[in-house]
Length: 378
Image (cartoon, rainbow, N blue to C red; front, top):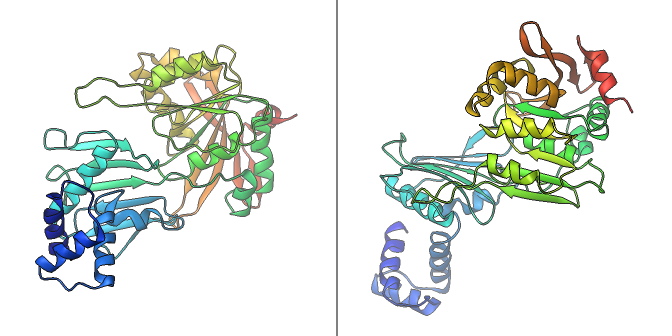
């Protein structure tokens, strides 16, 4: 089929117009292929799949529960349906086929991908996040990583029903939102940070205006008054970039009741902290961290990118944020809210004290439990 498709593409390229079923049938006869209604239909579908969208990966992206599709060279394709990467029986004829797909996906994102720029990060019109690295930079071949946006919003009740949170834990998190407590959601990659944050934003009163700032559109909160600002990398000429730092500053001029930074990744944290220190209550963001105790070191490193020293970072964080909600994904792929920490400044510096360990059967309060309960009390 691969040789037939290559021959068909070559034959149809000279038409100078969109091809029809008759054109495909004629080209198949010239190539010595069997021509029936079924084979022509199959050829038309194969041509379509390999010229638009994600080609042979399209069906995987549309599969139920799929959050990621990963291609590691021509022979290894995996999908993540919520329990970790699973190998699927799909291969490419060679690395050149993967390379051409990666280049086409990059072009669909408005990005350049070639030997001079062997990696790309972008978003397809469908919302699918694309990252690709060409061989030989990537081994065992060209690698493509596709992140599927959430197809629906999950409420806090949905997370309780799924076993990600207890009823008591959900009540605690509702208190965070209703009392306009500024917070961070921390966790590792794929742990469910964005899902939890979207669920919490769905609890924001409808009369309040949410302004979201994201590097790539992922948050889908069930809220009627939500405005999104999305960053943009530079084009092939190195111009046209829109940074999250710029967008946070713009968001402050848009009268937000709740300022939300989808993910803190760099210097934009300084603007976010400044905003939360100037009367913008109830703001929130996500950040990558291994535990609540590791959040201070992560914030210090990010603040340094924005020119904020350690002491200044500590002062800003303690004044701007109150709580860290940590989510985890276990070896079985289950995502759950694990801990809630209270941000403090001690003689040793910034730290997050465990306020509560959340379990599906209830809450065990830690050293800062009384302070946490006071923050969320009505």
